[in-house]
Length: 139
Image: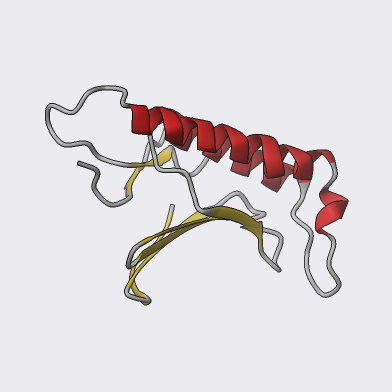
């Protein structure tokens, strides 16, 4: 059985956060069909839209907003690869925000989670349950 999104810190990592991971119940198989499906979802997300965006960030240009830089998009790709390797559930969507960040969003029943990769390289996690903020952490 999967638990809610947890965060692991690793000071030896080059990014501020090593990964956000899902925990597993004792005795669960190392790799399940569901985990393989999640890995495929992550790969699809990396291939499109993230790779498309890093090749041409101008497609994200909107009046009154900051376009995410190639470096910010690359950081988001690296985070996505780490999360996929750790078996985390893939986000429901990935979007640029108005301030030049890339945001991974995941909605499941009454739980909404976001990981925001900022232009300065920081990552912030927010968790909402029943539309109420229950956890916010800068990683």
